[in-house]
Amino acid sequence: MSLRGGRNKIGSTHRTEEISEIQPPRPSWELRFLKGLLFLYILLGLLIAGINFGWAPNASPRAQAVILALWQFYENQFKTILIIVCSILTLRVVGKREIPRMRRYNLIGFVSAAFVIHILGPLVSGNPDLYFVGMPLPWSTSGLRLAVGSSSFYQDQLPHLGEGGIRSALVVFAAIHVVVLAGTLLLGRRWQCSTICLFNGFASEVFAPAFPLFGKRRKLGKGTLGFFSVMRWLLLGTSLIFTVFWLAVLVFDLQPAGMRLLETLETYKYLIVELLLAMFFWTVLIGRGYCYYCPLGTVLGWVGTAVGQKIVTTRAKCIGCGKCDAACPLSIRIKDRALKGEAVVDSRCVGCGHCIDVCPAQTLGYSTGFLRLIGRG
Image 1 (spheres, rainbow, N blue to C red):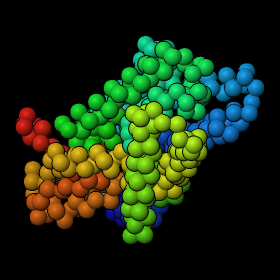
Image 2: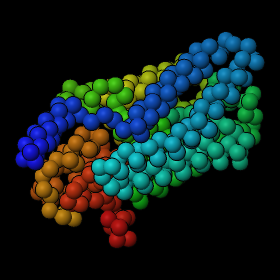
Image 3: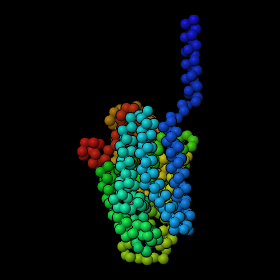
């Protein structure tokens, strides 16, 4: 009897294992909740952006005030709460299969950056629109346009910000450039792209396990990578044109006839190439899609390479499992170089450390010239 029962038990276990191989385990409640929050964030972003850029310009003053208050709440309080909640969920999801040391640093950075830009900054300055100048050149010229009194951006912001609010925004805009450049010289591209970026960087980390929103995660093909490469140079060139134009207007006090047209083109660039396309990638591809061709990221990638940013591959012997390649959101080939003990130097690397966290042999590490100098690289 016991032998027969034992056989049945073994057979049952074997069949269960076969079924589990065919049917992958259901996502945890944390992952389902995280995907739900990602869907909500995208939906509200599209809805509020559509109202703000589409309907608000022709609405009554009272309606415009309501729309503005809604947009500011979404960009400030809602986003900060979302970053905190999703950071906790992501750590719970990822922590079940790896030790997320680098991710933990990333998420602490994004929570801190959101608190400064979206909560503390508006509270101290009285300007709830500081996020407009939260990304430095060449990503956005909003700070330069805000300094040009004849620009439509300045004229739109003046009624509800006043001269004092505009001055505070320009101080923040200048300070952010100092913080980003200094941090990158010390810590490489990781500082901006995986610690303080409140556009695509934060979303790529706090929602990381939830990408893509629909379908299964898959490796990017040569065609997709080629598209990103072309977009990288196109967007960098376009952004530099905008930057040079507004610097010339500001420095030489110019009043060119095409100023309003250029402002309109930059708005459409933001809405289509950055906001909508980034959200599209979140939905069907990867979270770091925009990071492949972000103009600021491209420049900081070059700076990071110049200051010795690299992934160290000699802390232990590589076992060739390939988990690092699978974890890299920028499709950088790490395993082949790790097997040879060669450092990974690539300007696309955002320093997220996902490869470091998943390495079972603890072979990998993140390093820059400064980190090596203080014995941390």
